[in-house]
Image (tube, rainbow, N blue to C red; front, side, top):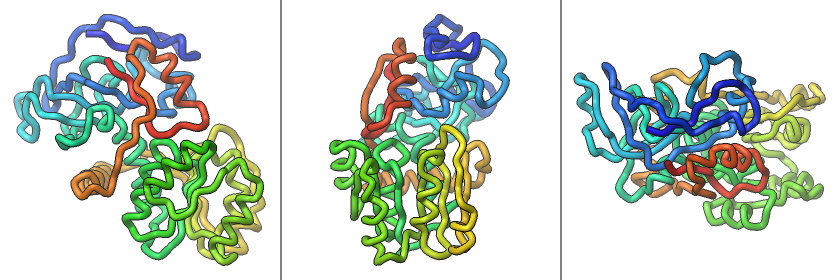
Length: 319
């Protein structure tokens, strides 16, 4: 089969499409023939070595959707030919087939496309984890989704509405803001507009927001703290550099800055996350947004695109 292989850390050009042996399922595993593959910013950091050493060569990727190709002898929860999505793989999902532990394989509804299925794993789980587990968001509260047009943000807006929150969202393009509005955000602002800070305070009657979901903390964290209500929480989902804050902005509000990464999620927590995702898809409260489909052979371009500002949903690759 074909798979992307990385033989050294570096820029997107280090990803090479190569022939590798077809995987075979071990105990507690299945092999999925992938029809679509999710691309996440974290994979660009892994490619450059930010997350530490790797055994070379390796295949990146955790998300994907396809059809079960073969199952291990002890696997009964899924069957060959079943449509599934993945939130993890033994050897990486940037490939035509991926071996997976059964805990990382989930049923994909018939009315959800493979491309949409590939948009679930990291971004939707991150949105739910950030909002429910880390922010401990409650009905009646107000949330600011800062940078709401990407895969995480679009899911977070929908989860927040389903929870009964008032949703303020920001986006950098007119197209992205229209998308977020269509997904249920009550108020959508241009995050390039200097007046957005006063506008957010006006929308909350100068009280501030209870929760901020922050995708670019190195740029926005200091301002986020000034937008919080008393006992407010900022959940840092993404950052591309250092940030400088005034600690007194947390003191005066009894405010919290809470980090998160899916690497820290326990199996029990991950089970609850994907149960919630399944229910949201079944009830129709979660619409999965795909921005662009790129051939697997163009993985380098996919990595360039996923790091650009102004996305409107998820970037996926097609084997």
